[in-house]
Amino acid sequence: MSGAVGWITAFLDTTHEHAEQTEAFWARVTGYSLSPRRGALGELASLLPSDGDPHLKVQAVLESSPGGLHVDLHTEDVGAMAARAEVLGALATYLDAGYVVCESPGGMRFCVVDHPGFRAATPTTWPGGRSMVDQVCLDIPPSRWEAECRFWSDLTGWELVDQNPADEFRRLRRPEGLAIQLLLQRLDDEEPVVVGHLDLGSDDYLAEAGRHLELGATEVRRTPHWVTLRDPSGRLYCVTSHSVDDPAA
Image 1: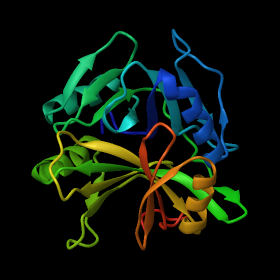
Image 2: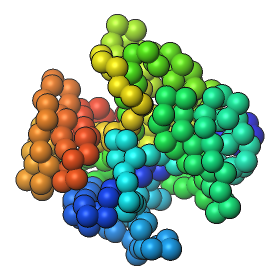
Image 3: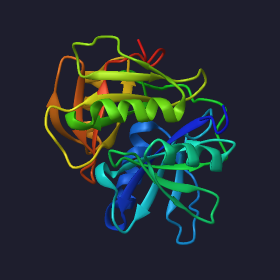
Image 4: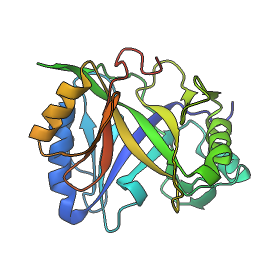
């Protein structure tokens, strides 16, 4: 497919006043090192796993995007993918820097970029087990559910999988070798736009959540399968029980 997705990067967009604290927190909870800063104002950095290519990056911004998160879709043909996104209903802003800033029909911000990664990192091992940021969950208001699921499936070309039609989740079956997969969650209540949050897979999600709390996270909700937390900047994310070896399981 022209303009196929070859890699996904999750970007944590944080206002300047909270950026340093947030970067340090995510470096500690992932076990990754922070790269040298880059960008015109030194606003960008990658979180570098000990093996594999980066799939999580940080960006200091004047105004955070909804949810404090956007994704980069990496492709060898930026123009073709951006054009396809527009045909499918996205709003696209073409820039001279070699990437395109877009919003899905439901308002989820993403960028179409080149320079894909090629090798997924392995989970980080802690005393309580292994964990890894391996999923972006798109939180979709009920009125936008079907259209937004269709948009992301058509844009990526990935199969939309509904393992249990009775629950609120669908997922996109990613190609083998990518570090980040996309989960789609239907919200109970209406919200202005679609937002994304990070999910970590873990061997023991309660022990992993406890480690995050010790590092400065705040607990929001606990369920039989995940714990919802806030990072020091207030960004929601989840530590889940899904397998770090097979996140789709």
